Image (cartoon, rainbow, N blue to C red; front, side, top):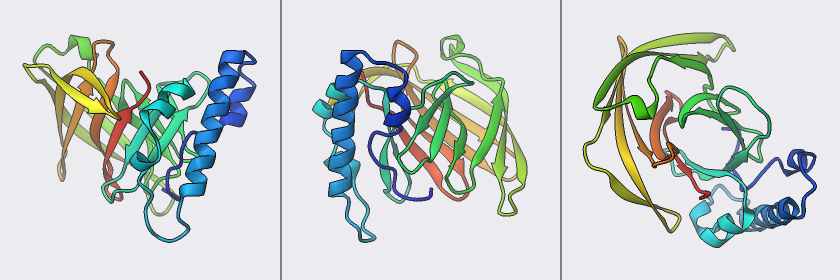
Length: 222
């Protein structure tokens, strides 16, 4: 990732999408969140913990979709939904780094180390996974020579028997846990997904690539 993820982004692009008073209110509050984060951000090498800056009230008042992403080294921040249609949902950070999620699963990234250029999977929908499902997954990465290379995995997704409750930025969500294991000739990946009753992946810990390892991703808006 080129730099630290920052709070609430791409608002200039969003302005053109709506002129309603309700949207403007959320937009103005999101801008305030961004300004507060920039002021709070230390210019030294210390990492800013977004959890200490963003409150549940700010998230709810903004009234826009937002996710929280944390790297293994503790670097974290928020991204907002990029307008427009495509395969999956693309989330944009202030540093122009993006992550595209398809049903909550990482499909592509840009502006991060060893980007995921794309991925394809025959995984069934969350509703169709009754116990364990087996499928194939192919992931394309950007190498150091700016050339793409592919990894192919045999995967299984196991649904845990009992639902549970998780807390994300002070809000409790009832979710179903799924655990995914993907195996190639050289790697074993183990991912976790926590899906609510609307099939929204509220929290996940999933493998990005050899440079960044696993990402924690949480959906913050209700």
